[in-house]
Amino acid sequence: MTDDIYRIDKARARASFGRAAETYDAAAILQKQVREEMLSRLDLVKLNPQVILDAGCGTGLGSHALQRKYPASQVVSLDFAHPMLKKARQTYRNVGVLQVLKSLVGLAKQNLVCGDIEALPLASASVGMVWSNVAIQWCNDLDAALQEFHRVLQPEGLLTFSTFGPDTLRELRVATSSASGYTSISRFIDMHDIGDALVRAGFSAPVLDVERFTLTYDDVKSVMRDLKSIGAHNATDGRARGLSGRGFFTKLASAYEQFRQDGKLPATFEVVYGHAWRAKDKAIQPDGAMPIHFMPRK
Image (cartoon, rainbow, N blue to C red):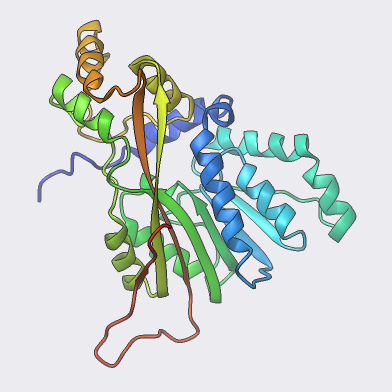
């Protein structure tokens, strides 16, 4: 068995996100858009979960939005970077959500958990909804992560998530491959493979669709600065070790220029949305088949 050069170094990823805790929200424009889209989709779902898990909560803005939407629910905010959880606590205080909860339902306790999505420190069948906004791409074993979501969900509980697909940062991937012989971007999983993994994990009739976003920048430094601000450093095992010299960035900037359009450099993001239910009984056909629905974007 050969080593996987795309395997995520969790310690490096955790440290990167920890350092980005104070700069994340200002730079996470795309993450905000995706979060709002995920919230709007919940309007179509009839669900009143007693406990909601925000898996990969970051600075807690998603947790806050969920608590506002479901004021009687207990929201558990989980992240593997402790500084992000400290920022989440501050976010709750700044928006006054703790005071709102106390006045509405007599709750004032904020549930912050430092843990890994691939090994959730939660009891089985303890959660009514799992929400995860652009976090599972940092897992090394998607099957393990989805099996953990299935394990902690109660029967008829909902999993709703977003993650990045293979076209994400394709311009940077091409440019850096020209500038060095090392891995530069994480390996993102195709929507259809995610659907297969959901079925393997035991979820019922998953529904997935894709949306593409293009952010534009004046130069490569601005692209890299935004990625650094949200903690999205290259954490793959096949990355270059040590500091990159001026020559590398010169080559990178030159290679990225092939994508310039209308005076701007694009950065493409392919966002995969998905939801699935934990059924009381697995809705598997006699031949072992289970349907997966892929919804086209209009």
